[in-house]
Length: 307
Ligand code: PSU
Ligand code: MN
Image (spheres, rainbow, N blue to C red):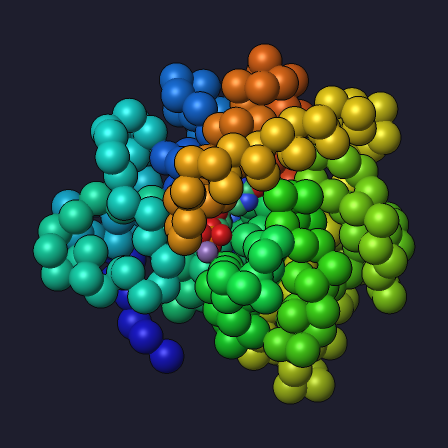
């Protein structure tokens, strides 16, 4: 496995050494997924939520070509305010490091780095997945193949409806990535509680997720990722009519403006935030904070088992 360096003496290094619970957090949502200036405030709130639930937050990103596991507040501020910050998937890490760049890590890159330093749990908002039109464009997020080979538990609210949700679930099955609903048998639709797709498995508590993680090791099936899909309560979701309208409009603009490749996800997210006049942002923030809390409780339950 690749070796990433984590600065000795930091809070995250000490927690890992002592077997205390740590939760990885990504920086792409900070640099590219959330509008400025709210992004920095939210990034700090996510970290505080992890702390309040008894774990140490490790926001991962690249500063001056150095991969940092546990960005300090200056570094977090830099990735939240400097423009542009590169969006780094796994394949970009080495080039960015060698050229001394700043960069925000996606779910794929954050998972790879977290697993390499021994962090087992990661909280984010939504995963990348198979884009609509993928049959023509081949646009499928590297998040999926990376999770196939990375031992990490990712707590998320499913994938956004900007993607092809059904195709994403099929690809996760093919790739052998486990998917369990948290107190639900329906795959969440990020802004919406229910994406309309069924799940085979549901878990009821952080302790039960910790049991699953222990069983993965016992059975030797722990080398890929596990997704814990945590839906918003129905009364906290985005108004479905507003959601559908905004999505249709966003997809049309994508075509009109000729946006492709890794710009697609940030473009559509920004469209949601402006077109809903902040309503989608409030929902987005709730999702991330709820996932941070659940991920921390899973990390605490796992550490208690000595996993
Ligand atoms: N989904 C969201 N918000 C995000 C992302 C995904 O709801 O900010 C980010 C994550 O960092 C994810 C990346 O890993 O977008 C996927 O981008 P792409 O589709 O280019 O792989
Ligand atoms: Mn893509």
